Amino acid sequence: MADERRRLGRGLAALLGDSEPEATVVERAKLQRRVPIEFVRANPRNPRRFFQEDELNELAASIKEKGIIQPILVRPVAGQADRYEIIAGERRWRAAQRAGLHEVPVLVNDFTDKEALEIAIIENVQRADLNALEEAYGYDQLIAEFDYTQNDLAQVIGKSRSHVANTLRLLKLPSKVQDYVKDGRLTAGHARALITAENPEAIAERIVEQGLSVRDAEQIAQEPKIGKDKKSGRPRKFKDADTEALEKSLSDMLGLLVSIEHRDNGGEMRIKYRTLEQLDELVRRLQNG
Image (cartoon, rainbow, N blue to C red; front, side, top):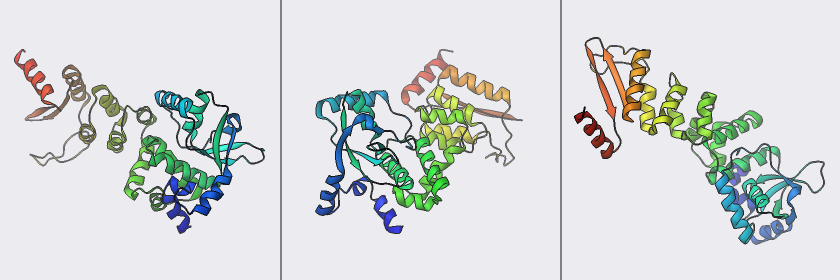
């Protein structure tokens, strides 16, 4: 098993035999063939769920011009003659359909369910094709179905254990926040900042509306929590609804992050800007009343 994981950890090139002895490459060539495109089907266990339309169209245009350069990695479908399930290369297969191809080059190999899922995750992670949630779902599948530990996953995919752990934590976020990550409105960094927040959905909406950075998200996520006031050392209270509403109103009006800290003997209001242009605009508006 250790040897298998080391081989998987070297990536898709090793799995396809691109770095193996000449005899292995020759043997691999025997497994390569061209098959009717309708004989190939998508893998329902593929961790990748979202395909950008513009990327598919660009690839389809390239395939029309030069064809499919790298064969699609497939395995035979049990009980169905001459039918194949994609292990790696679904994007190429989808683009080939758009390009009007009748046949596609495939590399056939008998992979187990476990190996198929591992390879699909490795290929997509190494090519940065998965969004953070798809990556997390893939890791969770390996853990749930094949008793992987986080250390096992880190070795297989060539990532750190902390990366695996932080990615899996994204699955704890509310579905609305996960949707923002899936459609690209929130990055993985934004999402990680919201994991321990008191109201992740509200903060996520604020981040999206105002285009806030990951650093901004981290600061906002910490604001509602009870902690020690830096000056007095006394416990800091949760912000009431009126204060939060005022913060949102001012933030919307200025287009900048506004934070209000109210205390019994006064308080402070902070306005965060990211560029000198934003500062100049703020000064201008204050000077003009």
